[in-house]
Length: 235
Image (tube, helix red, strand yellow):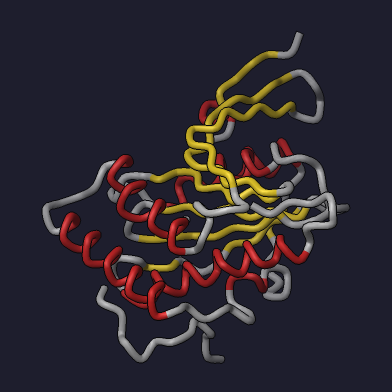
C-alpha cells in the first residue's frame, strides 16, 4: 500500500521536486515567452482597478507585515479578479485538495492549493499566498509539485506565487522532457506598474487557453502612471 505524505513534508527544496518528478529548469528565454511577449493592453477601468489595489496594499502594508489571509485578499484575489478569472467561463476552487502519486507508485503526496481556477482543463494555480516576511520563491518547490498533479497533457501549465510584495510566475512542460521556467519577479509593492504587467500576464494565459479550447490541454496571482496604456516590455 502506498504511503501517504503531505506535499510540504515530502517536497522541501527544488532538488526534491526535480528528482522526484524528473524536472529540470530551462534557461532558454524562448521556453517561457508567455510572461513577456505580446502582452495585451489593459482598459482604463482595469488600470483604475490596479491603482485601487495598490493603494489598498500600500495602506495596509504601512502598518507592518501582512499575514497569508491578508495577502490573499489584498494581492492574489484582486489580481485574478481584474484579469477576469472570477467571471465566466472560469470556475474557482479555494483550498482545493490535490493528490499525486510519485512515479514509483510507493508514495502518494497530498496537499491543498490556495486558489485554483479551472476552465476546459485550464489550471490557474495560486499557491503560497505567503505572508510578506516570507519570499514568494519559498513556495516554488511545492508549486511545481502541485502543477504535476494536473491532468496529463503536452500543453503547458502555469502557476503564480505571491507574498503580497512580489509575484513570481512559472511554467511547466511535461511532453517528452519535463522542464520548468520562471519569470522575473514582479514587485507589486515597490514598483506600481508591475501590478498592471502581472495582470497582463494572467490575461495572456486566459486567452492562450481559449485559443486551445478544442484541445485536451491545460494551463494554469502604486498609483499607476496614467500614461501606462499597455504592458509591452521594451527590449
